[in-house]
Image (cartoon, rainbow, N blue to C red; front, side, top):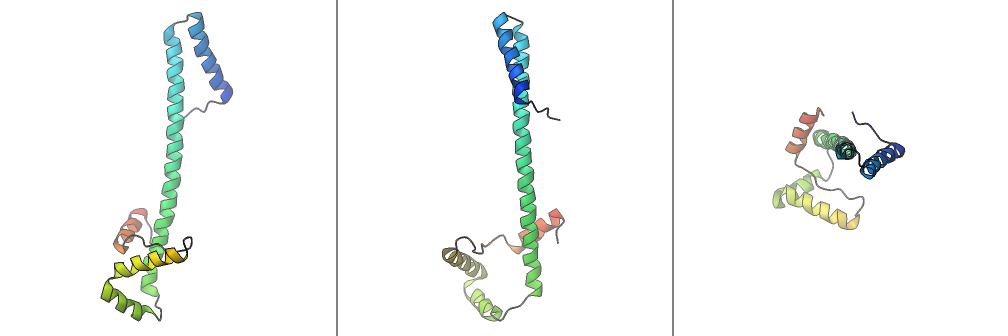
Length: 133
């Protein structure tokens, strides 16, 4: 549990440290208070880092869930152009077609372009780890 110091409490502790130095109190008292503030600051930084990591993990879980939709879609959707695209992919390579399509789309629409992601095996493994589809 982290105790959050408000500005007034923090200032009071800093004043105690300063007065301990000024009046010649036991230097250990000032050192203990300084260490308390440093520990509090370190705990606050760690708590902020933990919150940021949890937020990032939640965002990644959403991305992984979306990738699962792509894998499922491959089994359930067909389009007129599939045969033509399949022939091109077989001729130059699926990765080459995906990479070229992604690069060309980014040039055409830098904000809305489709971006090539991880392979389906990676997506399935991530979904299995996170309890996704």
